[in-house]
Amino acid sequence: MSNASDDSVSKIRVSSNRLSKSRPRPIIIDTDPGQDDAVAIMLALACPEEIEVLGITAVAGNVPLPLTVKNALSIVQLCQRTDVPVFAGCDRPMVRPLVTAEYVHGATGLNGSGLGDPAQEAADGHAVDFIITTLLAERDQKVTICALGPLTNIATALEREPAIAAQIEEIVMMGGGLFEGGNVTPGAEFNIYVDPQAAAIVFGSGLALVLMPLDVTHKALTTPERIEAFRALGSPAGNCVAGMLGFFERFDVEKYGSVGGPLHDPTVIAYLLDPNVLTGRLCNVEIETESELTMGTTVIDWWNVTDRPNNCLVFGDIDAEAFFALLVERIAFLTH
Image (tube, rainbow, N blue to C red; front, side, top):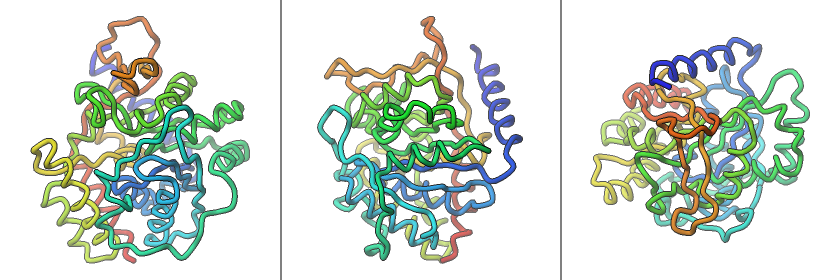
């Protein structure tokens, strides 16, 4: 496929989805906060007229599960959206031992946020059960899954109750990489590497999939000016974002020698709000699960060199200025 035809296909698909909606787009956010996850959650909660967050399901990833649950609760509290339930999910990958990333996110996962302990607790029940029950109950409109971390919860739900697939509009994920390679091994990006077996289930599911790889997020850098724009909002939410991103970028600035760090997970929510800030194409994506050398690599057939069928809309570029302008504009609605 050419770039032009791929981009037009993705825009037609997105537009037809939007026109069918009679209410804000219902989503479940599956996440392992993480500063960038936190910003993505804040962005979604700041847009209730466009996005209806049915619930947040936490998974082990950037930090162990008790911290990802706590961090999700803290962000919901900051946004004064404690009506959105947070559920604890899988505390380890399906097959492999858990790998975490405190060296990037700090010991809490939200270093730099300035947030204290949340007042509320996680909702009763397991995240996987919530995903299954919620999807089976949604009959008037399909639900979008926004996957910001390892895919353990989602794959487990699909394995446990295959009928939920009919109620999923699409799964929009941050993960993987092609031209940028990996960020935890030479070939693998963290979210996919943590649970490649879960990723293989999701990419083999036949569902509509959308992927935001490192090729996109490494073009969305948190420059000093962009961080200051959040602080200039003069709100607790703006200060929280500025503090988190100021901490979060230090690792990537040192690693890559860039002016700032890549802001990964909010690209998922940006796609729901304004897909025109992104460009990409339909591709075949397979997950390596056998070789320890390349475990968790997303094998993306960007140039259509195989006869494997396309199974994912993969984005490769982003208008970074428009992306950060969208973030600041919407986070400004969180005046608390």
